[in-house]
Image: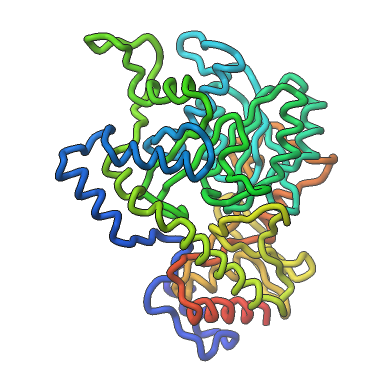
Length: 423
């Protein structure tokens, strides 16, 4: 949005009396506490600044303890963790690949549709084809009914890749039951849901392999970094080897299989180590933000991102869904959107533009993978022909400013701006 467009919004009568925030209100920015500096300095002072050191050992131990799995392997990014998880799952299912091929070469995998593309890109890295499974409306995650239907169409698929959207756990009991019935492995992308629980159990511990992320906007951050989670010592050892260029136990640099430079830095691990004690505090702050939005929007034709009664999200991002009858006319292309304002109605584009004009950051809901230009030719499976919950949530939904440093007064102003969008 250019300055002229912002000026037009700020001067519109619907926003009379409101002024932009002096400082940017972020969607979800890092929150540092000071302990991070202690462990980063420790790494530098002891000269452990590479991919080994006590910080890495400690964050691996702590992550496994918090989640309830036996092993956690620190990697450079959540995407690296996803890649090695999917590579390992492919090797378990189909054996060692041929030279210059991935472990999923020629095979399909059932994947969450409404997610960031980092969840599904590693399927392509490994030579596989993602088949996208529609969203269910109760948690905005993979629809078990659509997954069951997918197995009737592609009965030979043996890998499911599921993400927990915006920190809300999916219906893992149903998905696990379906996977077991078809002899399929699950790679669980818990990048957004660290600290969330489903039926009293931490996400990241429901799949055969799990992943969490410490990207800069996550609930616990190292600026970057990720973890692969597993319960097999052999799997953990294999991932550690792959992540350090697959060096063999030889007195020289010898390599018998493909490897990657994916290991976590001890300095990044120092930031994460300093963040770890604040996980529950961050979750409590995020939940308070969600509840304040929910209360503030009770008189609007909208709802908040849903969650199941048997789960406790980590509330990473608060999201809003506009009632279908309250949507103004809107059109979206690949690179831009247009809308026609109407009394009593609004749309994600109008609200996001208003927030931006007032110096606050919101985001559209993740654009579903089956609508992405790179993946449009891939199969998409809904629970019934013609249904497309993912596209509907994308059409009507948006992510609200959810930074855990936002004050109640600032949040009340966000709520007021959104109210005025419906005038």
